[in-house]
Length: 284
Image 1 (cartoon, rainbow, N blue to C red):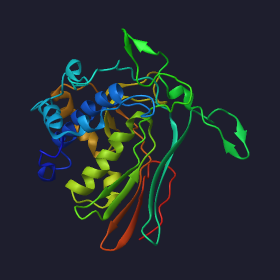
Image 2: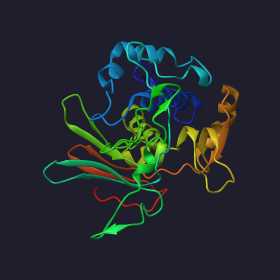
Image 3: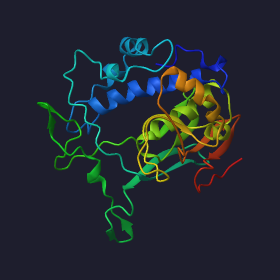
Image 4: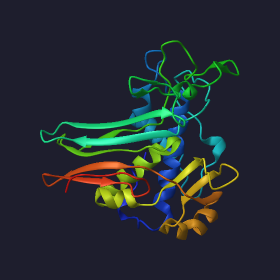
């Protein structure tokens, strides 16, 4: 959806490129919540969702200016029976590692135990997760099946986004991922845009502010803010008046990612880590 925009020419410190990322993510999330589920149990229309014509239709839904209408941000495959869009819970205690070895083998792995100490049960030194909570709690909504409903042997849906980026010659360029519950896709997107469009190093891309749309669990407040989430104590705060003028309800809060990345450039591995959390990178 973002390929049609010349984000590379847009200044990083202006609101417009961030607005475009937010609106694309809102549309993508609507599709993810509606259609995604364990492929062993539900039919996820992956090819239809990635079809160029469909992406063009979704691109056309991004307004030329200002915030999109929340009522219009819905799943949009007319030829596919649309299940019930039930978001449910996204687990919070997650970690990510990115690895590239001396032979070029690579891993992007995001793992979560659910909440707190997972299930609170340890077996042979392994803490068992609490991922049952990631299932939708209801099997159907308004007569439509919920993709992420609980079934025996089924895997719950997750927002984890371990990712590898390859260049046009299929050479590995980037390994990246993050913890962060439902905000993970936006953290990863921001990093990719920083590297690919703004030609930043992986570390500088990770250091970019986090700007998200959704609901954030904020332990510094007596409520969970919903709307445009702008990371406090970053240059993103200077864009708040612009976002408000665009029509967003803005919350300036800690938006804490935990990105870890390895960028392969000029034959070298460049490790990058998120200073918002206690994490480590090794490499040049």
